[in-house]
Length: 366
Image (cartoon, rainbow, N blue to C red; front, top):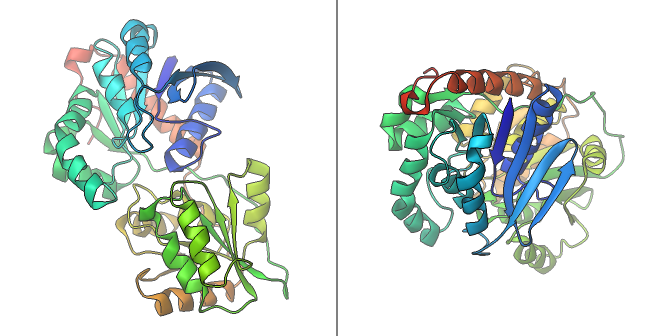
């Protein structure tokens, strides 16, 4: 199949959606599909990354949370029909709207990575105003793929008309060999994700003030809250105890994961909770905010994993959980869905929507 994947950003940009899209594209390419990524960036470019053709279109609106590329929309209007299927990602980004408005004949699959709200008071208000446009994407989609049952339930609560077109295919993890932290070394706690306010890394940093100097927090990711959180760590006298790594390549991240004693996610909103899944798949004791996505990942992981829920707004509770996690030792890696499972499920969806006229789209499972 010839697949066009529409995404707000793509590798080397990082984040949960970016990781999902990259892993999906790699798997589709390995399965023999012809994959092109259609995305937006500061400047136009076309390049091949690991067998995937990546078309980047210049931004018309460069605002961080509301990026929009008119050239991307125009390009889809003239080229969408060259694909067997278009697969758009993220309800919370305008690139997906381009995939809906710029395409009238090619089947559209939509993975919304839906949080249900914006992550500031202002963005929450805009989110409500955006809902009619979001409904346009959903109504135009032949199939909608949620990454957890919790995400599907939230989406259907807000858009009940899409229930019969919505399926759940959990995100994948990369199986990793079990590793043991070396006794006596600094106990490293891994915190991975885009540095946005809703990830609540500031709560984790404040909790670090309750831990001794033998503990270190490794923050992996980039984002608009990074500078503010670096300043917070410095004000709390934790500059040497909280290390911001920024963007890491796969090999460096694997090394960081192997050296960690525990992982933590204080995020307030997730469609899936990929950092928690990756930590459990590596056998890391994990502390997580008790949000529905994290709870669903824990159920997928099953018995034998070490995961403790903690209230990110309770510094003492979060700190105690982190200390306990670093003292526990590695566990058996969780058996979670892999990206091979994801790719097989997504290709089945592609086959289903490609076999029927777009006007008749609407039933891929429940």
